[in-house]
Image (cartoon, rainbow, N blue to C red; front, side):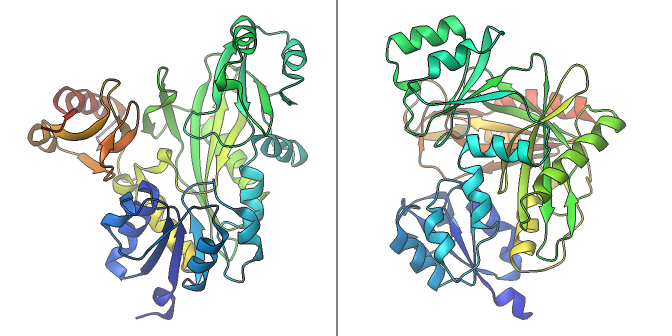
Length: 387
C-alpha cells in the first residue's frame, strides 16, 4: 500500500459532507477521524473514530489534530484561531476560512483582487437604516456577516419590509457581527463552478451547474449540469471562478457561486471552501466526484478527471413543512425502478421543516429527460411520520 494511503485524515464536522467524503475513498481503506458534537451524526454510519466535541472547542480540535496527519472541514463554522496554531496542516488553509467566515471580508477580498462582485454596503445595527437609504433600488439583499448558512441569515427585502422588521425589533435582524447589504440582480441565472487545486498548484474545474431555488425555504431545489450557458459564457464563468480561487493561494475544493445577468455580466456571489451541494451530482455523473477529488488533494495524489459522463440533475430531499420527528420513506420501490436515479440519504434521525434529509442524483441523455425523471421521482417518494 502506498504511504500516502496511510495518511490519517481528520475532518471537522460529521454531517453529510463528511460522510460522503469518507464513502468516496473507503475502497482504498483510508483512515478517518471526525470531530462532531452529535455522536449520532451522519458520519457515525461510516466510522467509529469520532471525537465528541464542539467545532469551537480548542481541546477537541487539538485532540483531532494529534491523531491526524492532515485536517479538513465540512462546514465553515469552526475555530480558526486554534487551527492557525496547529502543526498539523489544514486544507484549505485556515487563512482562507478566516475570510470565508465573514461575508464582509469576502466582499472586500473580491474587490481587492479585482474579482467582479455585486455592489454592496457594510453596516452595523446602529447604521442599518442609513445604509439602506444609500440604495436607489427598493429591493436589496440583507446578509449577516457571520453565522449564516444554507439561506439562513440571508433576507431579500423591500425597504418597506425592512423598516417594518426594524421597528418591530425582529429577531431575524439580530447579528453581533454586522451586515452586508447587496444589490439584487433581477432574473439572473445562479451558477456554480467547482474548482479544485492540488498541493502542487495544479488546477482543474468541473462543468458549471445551474441552480434553481425553492423560494419558501431559500434553499436549492434542484440543479442541472451542464448549465444552459452558451460556450462563451461557460468559458467566462470558468475563468472567473478559477481566478477567484487562485487568489486564495491554497489547495482544496472550492464551490464558486456566480450570478449571470440578462446582459451576460458575471459576478461572484460567494465561495464555499469545501464540497458543496452543487457538486453532489459528480458522485455519479463525473469520472471523479468532488469528494474523491478532495481526498486526492488531502493525500497529495494527482487530480482526477472532471469530465462529465452524462447530463445530471440533483434535487434536495427536504423535510415536509408539517413534520417534526422520526420519519420513514414511502414509495421507495417505485423510485428505485427508475433508470438513472440514485438516492443518497444522510442518516439524519429526525425530520424538521425544510431540513436536508438527503438528495437524489438523476442521470439522463439530456436536461429534459433528467427533469422528467425528477417529476416521476417526486410523484412516488414521500416522507411521512414513522409509525
